[in-house]
Length: 251
Length: 279
Image (cartoon, chains in turn purple, cyan):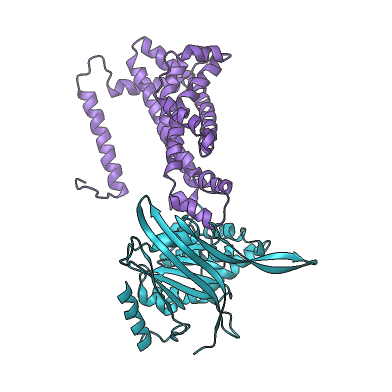
């Protein structure tokens, strides 16, 4: 357990992780937190949230918005990434990559002018926030494609378009899922911010802002736990989907 | 000696050099491979290109395959093409510079697309061969049976052993239909039993068509020479930078081609010594 690179069996890992979680919760509960609520109070708030219909409606609104944003982001990422192999479109793809350094502050007003309502504003902000990160990761996958993949295509007499299809579109399809999985956290992190801009449609971000406003920390932490839990579920689900769709990734 | 004649030149390298900046890797490479005819037999050509490690064999391999453009000179192949004459179809011959895809290439690590099953990979190659149009699946079945990979057709490359990967690579390039097959270090890292199987397999391929020409790039001199009909030795000379062909040995003339009982033959052993002295 304390040797570098040693492998533990599944049972030992479960016991070890459970023990570590229990220890962390115990330290949290016993430490003098002041205003910070202990785990039992957070658990109580979580129970209240789960028993109220309010959580599910807001959660559904956030999930729908996230899924929509992911869909548009994937489409745009794939479009610009595939086009990046054509020299004419490479600067545009590179510009999108650099956009990850931009902050949304100050741009929100421009997006408000460009969109027709609050729903479209939230969606466009999310997409704008996600696409540069997705594109950065996917372009890295394309650049890292081994030269032998292209050379095998050449020896088989493939045209450049056939090579693009085989090596990048088909060959890297599984990586799209991995990129979404790894960058999903960005979407989840941004959702609370964009939902605060237009609170009429609700959402888990709206709930968080509301509880935060009244310093209801047990509910804030309970919501954070739900956000974390859902993120982990997505992570697991996308990983499973990738293994199911692309059998070779689990070999 | 087995009767034979040498006919058309199938491949010619003329004044090939390869330099990166002012550093020359290859220079003045000139050689040709001719069609060896054995009356009453279907016999392809097996040519080996030997040299010490780091001498530029792989670079020459890439130039021959068309994957690397030489700095000067050309690689020309003699190609048969179907042509319509008077309502019928005949084969005509023409010479042209080699292009990527003209040669079947088997890389040292037998690289295959990791996302394709063996069957899918073979199908991709077979679809590139107009002769197999509509009969791709039959051809795959036939080759799979002949090369004993029928059971692994639905597997992915990472599920195959080294020997199976090599056979898949060879079949893939055979299905594509090239007359030329370039193999980079096909004997590297193989144990004695597998080595024997691989040499048998290559001989089997060379006998599959009169024009089938295997070019083996290797530093395993004994194994390579044992299955070849011609040996080209890549080495360095004092008169210039970069490697060049220092010697061509016609093994047919020495009675060393197409024989399985060579290993203890005195002429064979002397030839190996001669080659080693050139390296």
